[in-house]
Image (cartoon, rainbow, N blue to C red; front, side, top):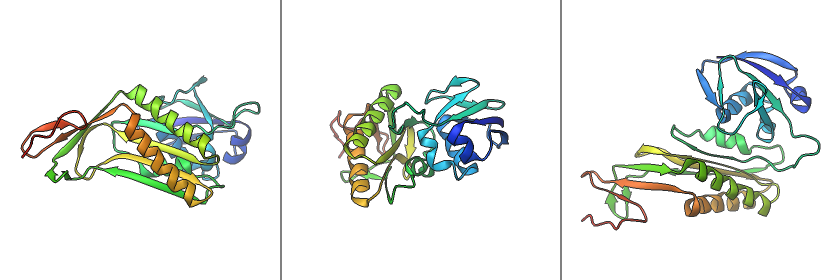
Length: 229
């Protein structure tokens, strides 16, 4: 995939060029995957990418945009009169989650601590064997709720950056179901914000979990009673 990259203002200075052609081996990328990849190509730009907006072929890119071969992607720093709020990474994915992407989203020169939580599918629940989990979500509403939670926490803890990814679909034992990260100047705020974020996401985001036993029986967690012996 070949891309034409255009940089403005501070992004231009950090990238050390106004525009360039870059190539990679991907067929296409989600916008968040593109941001992670671009950060690897431009280390000086990487810590600031989460604060920037992107345009694809002359149009502002929504959070669910795809980057494809031949696209022109423009990197746009925050405008002078805009809000200083940091855009939070908060998405539901049907593919394997990237820990590196979540960490990259919260990295910042001012952050001296990054706290990370990973929810992993385990082989038991309440003393009974588990074969796999199925996760389902009202994706648009779940992402909106996750973003609201992260924005609220950022307001409660100024200087804290947060990111969260949740997976849906059929997950095997050992698969990562959710990743949450929080960065701050000091570890106390990072730990507290990370824990509060996952607790609030689990409590209110419209994401459901179906648990399968080795005998083929299944139940929806927090809805159906477990009658298995």
